[in-house]
Image (cartoon, rainbow, N blue to C red; front, side):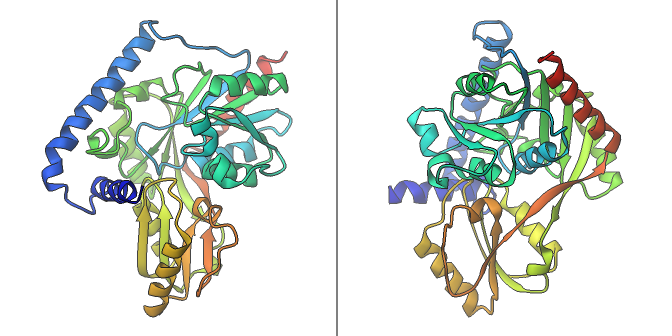
Length: 359
């Protein structure tokens, strides 16, 4: 188990370009080629009707991406729930990646809209965070079709399919694709050579594109031109805003996170005026060991670090952890920087489909 963890972390650092793969290059190229072929064949099977697609008698809104991790799906779901009509009965269907629920093959309701009823180790970090920060029911499990039918028995009008783009077994009424504006095509290579998990041509399935990490109007216009080769879907430009910068601005900090694109979080920490003394990155969804975190805290303190900064998703996995310096979670949300009218149109269409299915 220890060796497997070390290998996984090494491969993560290779994908993140922190390490050169050397003799792994041909191996990575081969895996990427097979991965790409598998993705294309699977889509072909669904497009030709060889694999069955299940349609639920209610509105399904898929939120997904074509590149692995770090595009901002979770804060987008939080923002949508906050701005959609509160009268609509919303629910979230999520996989709970690497959670005990997922690996067991079960489907469980972890929230009725009043917080999580299960520990984070059991349901997964993102579902736990969504349960903690939203007021809608949440079902967790690999089988999102079963989750959907359970939600329908409770008269849910709109089902938000988290990370739904590759889950083609379930039909959706509306497709929202989230991309990283700084690297929209995942280094233009499939995993593990790059970060692509789907073909860029799949962008043509989108009803809307959410482009995260937009810094300027010029960048927004350039991005629209770049992705217009694949889709004519309207684009909403967004950026990450820290809600509690006063807790860390001007401090010397250590940074740790387990994200698909940790460099984005590191950039956010820099932008709010922190001095970074040290950092540790782990693969997405990985839990930090308490001994490991204690050693990191001591190392940061020795370098004059005043606190450790992490994401909310990492914070929920720490429980009541205490160490020699404070651990602060940065609370973030997405703000719209371009395409405000498109955002309002998107919300209106989701509300229309939600109400239409229950007339």
